[in-house]
Length: 148
Image (cartoon, rainbow, N blue to C red):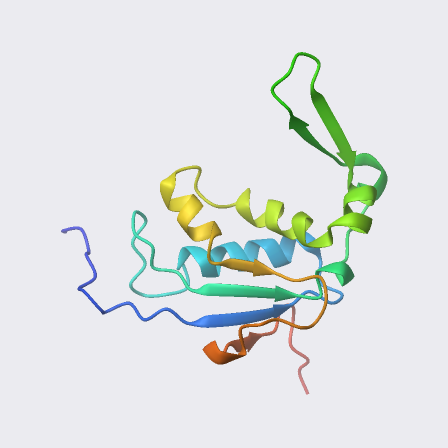
């Protein structure tokens, strides 16, 4: 069996909106990374950018489980001796809630040039407004649907 190569113009990229209001951070990040990667398409090829654009709104209303607000820390090294700075999840959630979702999704993408290209297709906003109405994004619902 040979390797599948999509033809030029065969992959049409779509735009999706995910509302993070009340959603669990990890489940939201997993679904967003899967869409960015293109794993939900039948033309998925691991070494090509087959994914779609993702817009995440209401990042400030995402839900965290357990004691992550007190126990989770984000570390950043400045490059200087003794320059390790740590920020708690609670402080990051108050200052930049969109950065929490971006870090969670980028951690699930490949650590290569492809991963950096995929990360550019992720847009995260703290409130419910976004400037991408011209792209006519489709809304994605996460979680279980109610059955009658």
